[in-house]
Image 1 (spheres, rainbow, N blue to C red):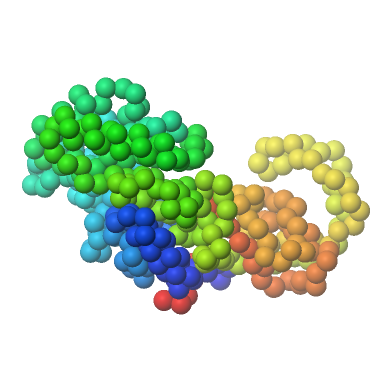
Image 2 (cartoon, rainbow, N blue to C red):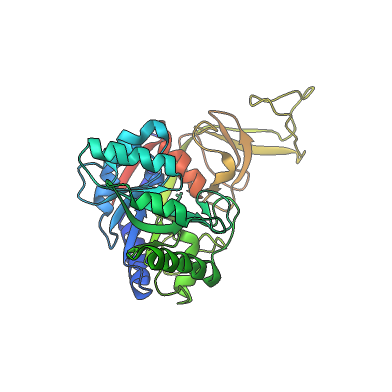
Length: 354
Ligand SMILES: Cc1ncc(COP(=O)(O)O)c(C=O)c1O
C-alpha cells in the first residue's frame, strides 16, 4: 500500500548514539528525545529508547499517554493548558511552565493524585515564544513556586530558534546560568537541571563552546534528520535519510504545460500561474496536499521536477525519465514534511532494521 513512509530504526539509533556522545563530551547529562514527529508511534519509540537518551519529551499529552508504560521519565514540552492539568500530572513527570496560575493548578492536581509534579521554569531570552521574559522580576514567581508543596522546581530552561529564529550563543547561556545563580543565592537551594534548548544548540556542541552548567538539551530534528537547526546544515557523521516517502504513479501522459481556457481558481481557491514550456511528459502520483505540503518534498531522482497538484494528486515532470504507471517514486522530507506524513493516517508506516 502506498503512500508509504519507510522508517529506518538503525539509522535513527546511530544518530542518537552520535548525539548522545557529543552531549556527554559537553557535560549534557540529561538528554530528552523529542518524539513529537513520531506522532505517538509507540513501536518506534520503544525500538529507539534509551539509545543514550534519558527522558521522553513531547509537546502533546496524548502522545505521552501512549508511552505511559515505557520505563522512562516523560516530559511535556508545550506549556500545559488549563483544560489538561489532570492529564499533565497523570501522564508526565515533568512539564515546562511559565504561568504561575497554571503551576498552582498543577500543584492542586498533583495533591489529588498524591504526587509531586516536577516543573522546568522557562525563560524567554529573546526568541519571543514561551517563557518569563528574562528582564522581568522572576524571583517573586520562584518564591510562589517553592511554597507549593506538590511542585518541585526541577530546572530552568529556555527555547530559541523556534519563533524568532534566534541562534543560541554563549551569551544566551551565560544569561540562563546567571538566572540559576540568582535563584540559588536568593532561596538557598540548588536547581539541578538547566535546559539549554533544542537542535539549534548542536553547533555549539560541535565547537565545544557550550558553557559548563548547561546540562540538558531537548533534541528532535537533529536526531531524526541528522541536521542542526541554527543554520540548517547536515551533520556529516549523521544520517539525513532515515525516513523515505514512497508513492505510486497512477497516470503517465504527454500534455501541454500550459492549461487551455480561461484560468480561474484551483481546488485550493488560489489563482494558479504557469510557465509554457511546450509539451511535457507528466506523471500523476497518488499523494496529495492532504498528506503533505509539496514544498516539503524532495524527489530522490534529480531528474524529477514537482509541478504542482491538488489534495489527492501530485503532478511531476518526468520528461527525462522512463517511469511508467505503477512505478514508485521516492522522496526525502524536511522536518515539517516528516511531521505531516507521520500524522497522516493515509500514509502507511513501514518500520525497518529494528
Ligand atoms: C520546547 C521545545 N523544546 C525542544 C524542541 C525540539 O526542537 P528540535 O526538533 O529543533 O530539536 C521543541 C520542538 O519540537 C520544543 O517545542
